[in-house]
Image (cartoon, rainbow, N blue to C red; front, side, top):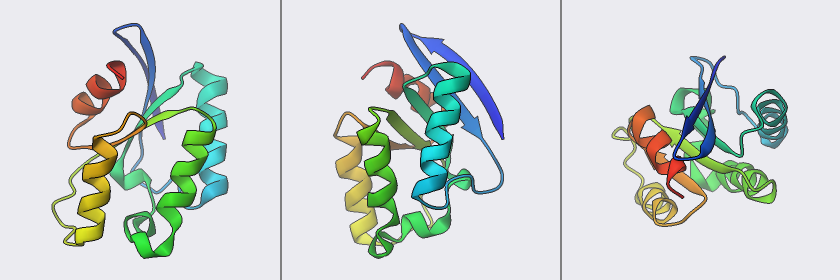
Length: 121
């Protein structure tokens, strides 16, 4: 796991990159939240899509809801960046659209977009 701490627009943002899934269930999400808070003090996290288990993107599994609830409970703004073009599920596309209209969870194409969004919410 590569953890980078970026300060932009007065916000402290932890940017995580991993080629293997770091978030696979609610406990691993909670562990990541606590690690980031301890190491950086950041309340905003951007993470690459590959660092999240593929099951997260199958909404019927319930994993996305369970994991995102942890981030919301701990008042962490969260952005997942990467390529979503391979997903054809209308519910997932709707979920991504609705999330991007909110203030807590975002699905963006690039690290730069994720950092910018988190710095401005």
